[in-house]
Structures are given as structure tokens and as C-alpha cells.
Length: 555
Image 1 (cartoon, rainbow, N blue to C red):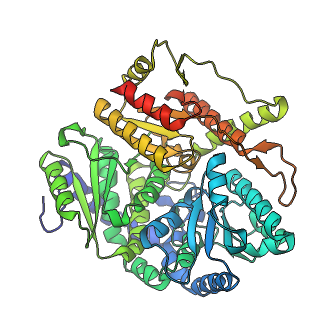
Image 2 (cartoon, helix red, strand yellow; image 1 turned 30 degrees about the horizontal axis):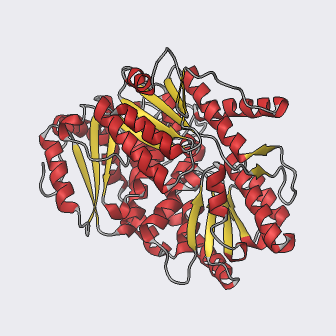
Image 3 (cartoon, one colour; image 1 turned 90 degrees about the vertical axis):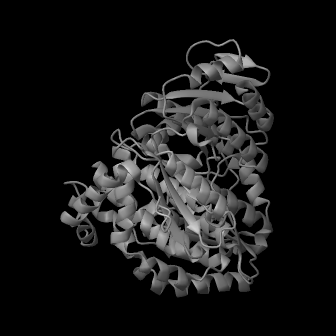
């Protein structure tokens, strides 16, 4: 390992050098800067109109005054907190900013609601007084079912507390021009509509209004952040893309992220960017974020480690030693050094460039998401069935044990046997898909289960809350080479919450409990139709106890 840079590419080094030479020879960076869609294909669709992220560090500078003015006005009006309602590219960058930078004095304490689980919705809306809350609805399309459902519900809660004439002043929107959300915001009198450049795709939108409004709300120095973004050299950024693409082509397609604790939240944003951009046409790079440290010999030959190291990381000595041991064991390691958290401005650009370049090397379009719609179509069919029949389609379990029900192929006489049978299938990764309320207890249970599965299978493991992961890793799950196993975890919704059919009106034909159940059923069906292996486990009325039963069954 190069002790100066902490990077060791080992068996990949020669091929990475060749890939970098190819990028220079074919002038890929220059062609991307010239907006040459032919870098990725002959058809400009979903390429030519997805490249405005290249300009964000410059083009967003004039919009910062508007962000500051709107946040200052909300604070002056008595707002003390901000609740962002969004999914995927509309919510992940805001979450990175909040978890990384905290809240500056005189600004808004930001929370992100990106779940349709009734308990998650109830907890988020009960977090504060509507009179002191700025609700920020964010969706590029202006029609995302989760965001629009959450917006209608939040508006009714605010209207009930403040009156309809005052409720709109506590809402703002971020969306594309001409979207349904923009129309709704005007109808309901939102205090402001931030109209984003429509040529920026959702997962490439961190340095547009979709990320910067939230960053401004908590008091991040936006000028400093964009200045760091402008400093990122596209040629340097493309080197990471060469490493990622070369590694994937060599079978090292498990991009394992190691981050200093102070910037750990950045991993979830990278996960969406890479998974949704590269997982298609039977190819893909699986980002592995938040995986517990495992013994060096547990990792397979499909790993690439990328280490983002913050200068004042108090844990750096231990992590440096761990990455050194991994390199000594033959695993490629690529290290990126950050001076302080504001370097994330440059990292957003680095990873966007790297993902675009990796897509080029893999021969795929990194800007479309052809398999995301499959789960949406299946979920809509489930919702339609519910509206016609009053119930969702029922599944027949292969096993019931205590309060846990298991749905899958084959037969099993116990929960331990069902899990053993499922995990014995050939695979290179196991994805835990949790359609549960995100709570600290559930986080801990999922982490323990993930670690146990990783040790047993020696496969990479990922975990995601549904429906949030449908907007990130969901594309890769159905579009890659199909070597994953999918453990879908569900539980009864408990106290349900109705979704208003129209904002300001009480009528409701569907609840959040029905919506998340339909999304879980729809995604399961889409995975099965794509030839994936899925084991669905209903954890029963106490999800934490159900997770403990699964863990005990693996012991």
C-alpha cells in the first residue's frame, strides 16, 4: 500500500491504468463537458436532458440568495424546524447535510420523512408544533406517490391546527417546472416554489435546490460548499470511475464504503447514485454501505474498498490499520482524503463524475432507471385490487412459527430450516428489505441480523427500509446479473393512518398501511418476475421480537 495516499489497487492496477489511458485517448471527460450524449449511446433520450448537474456548482450560485431569504422569512415567521417530505434523490442529500453539519444557531432543525409506514408518519408529524414547522415537499416529477401522499397528510394536519388560510404559509415546494406539485403548491398558497433545472436527474441533484434548500435551512455555508464543488477536477474525479468500472469488469463489483464517522451519512447518498445508475442490462456495481467490520478472511474476491477519510477522524489509526490489512490480503483499496466536511461539496461532484464514467466503461446508460417502474406497476396493481375488493391479495405461508410467518418456495419445518434453506442458494450478496418503521430498536435488530448473515454466507450484505430503497437500490436488485438473495421483512402496520384523497378534505380511500403493504407485495412480485429469489417474513405484531427470533434461528 502507498503509505502516502493509502491506496493499493494490486491486481487491478494495470487495468486501471489502461482504463485511464482509454479515457484520455477517447477524450471522454472533454466530450462529457461538451454534452456529447454519444459517450453512453446512440439515443439521446434520458441522456441529453440529464446532464445539467455538470453546471450545478456554477449555475446554483445565483439561487443562493433566494434560499437564504426564504429560510430567514420562515424563521422570522416563527418556524423553528423543517420537515422534508421526499424520497430518494429528493431526501438523501438533505439527510447527509443534517447528519454531517447539525444545525447552526438561528436556523431550522431539519428532519426527513421518507417512509410510508404509518408509525413513521405519525412520529414525524408529531415531532413539533405546526405553527413552528416549515414543511418542505420535494419531488422532481411532482407526482411521486409517497411524497404527494405525505404532503396531503401534512397539509391536513397543519390546516386542522392553523386553519386553511394559514396552513399554506408553512409549506414550500421543490420540483420541476410544470409539475403536479407546482400546480398544487400554487393552489394551496405555499410560501414559495423552488423550480429546479429539469435537466438534472434526481440522484444527481445534491447540489441543486433539492439539496441546497435543506442545507440552507440548517445553516450550512452554501458559498463555501459550492466553492469546494467547483474545485473538483473532472479528470481527477474520472479516476475513481476508472477504478469502479475496472473493478466491476474484473468481478470486484461490491463497492464497499468505509467512511470516517463524521461523514458516515454520505454513504447512503453514494449507495443510491451508484446502484440506480449502474444496475441494469445484467451489469451493476453493488454499493455496500454501513456493513460491520468483518474478519479479513470473510471477504470474498468480489470486493473493492473505497475509504473516505476525514482529517480529524479520531478513529483513523484503527481504520488505517484495518484497510492496510485488507490490502495485504489482496483486496484493492482506494483512499480519498477530506480536509473537513465542506469537502463533501467536491465529493458530490467526484462521485457523480465517477458514476458517469463507470457507466461508460460498463457500456450502460447511467442516467435511466428502466427497472424501477416494474415495482411501481406491480404496486399500483395491488392498490387497484384493494380499491375494487377492499383487501390486498393474500399470500399463503410455507411456515408459521410463534408469531412469525414465512413465505417462499419449498418446505420447511422450522424458522431455522427455512432460513438455512434460503441462504444456501448460490449468491454473491444478500439484501435485507425492511418494510418496517425506522426506529433505533429496529435499526439495531437489522444490524445484528445483517452481521449474522454476512458471517454465515460470507456474502456482501445490504439493508434498506422500504419504500425508501425502491428509489435507490431497487433498480440494481432487478437490473444486475441476478446473483442476490432478497429477505423481505414485513409486519402489521398497527395503528393505521388515512391518506387524504385531496388536501384540505377528510375523504380517504386508502391508508398508509395499505400503501406500504402494496409496495412490499409489488416489489416482491417484480423481483420474482425478474427471476430473483425472495424470502418474505412477516415478523408479527412486535417487529423487534420478530427480528430477535430470526437472529436466534441463525445461531
